[in-house]
Each structure stands twice: as structure tokens, then as C-alpha cells.
Amino acid sequence: MDNGTVKPKSVLDRVMRLPEIAVALGVCVRSVRRMIDRRELPPLVRVGRSVGLMESDVQACLERLRAKRSQV
Image (cartoon, rainbow, N blue to C red):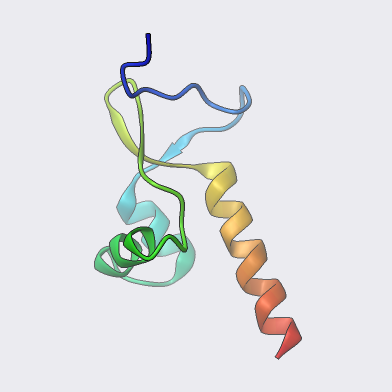
């Protein structure tokens, strides 16, 4: 039965909360929410009592942004 929780992809993967994601991406928390709404970032996940994004997903987003920037 799926209760909306997600298991981390690896033992070292962790949930990053919105303020931490905003700092990593260099934007404000509101911009992070907009990116999620526009599907530029994956949907928020719940792991236990924490809500945010998996660190591996944020890293993948950063890599996509870097690749896009280098193509310009």
C-alpha cells in the first residue's frame, strides 16, 4: 500500500528542504515552488516527516542547467 512516502534512492540520498534547495540553485524559495509547478523540478516527496526533494534529483537538475548553459 502506497501512503505517499518515498524511499531514498540510495542510503546516502537525503531529503533537501525548500530553503536548502533555494540556496543550492541560487534562487528564492518561491522560485523553487514555481520550478516545481512548471515541472522543471520533480514533485515534492515525503520521507517520514520531511517534505522536499531528494538530493540526487537536485544534483541532476543542477547538471542539466550547467549543460544547457554550456550549449549557449
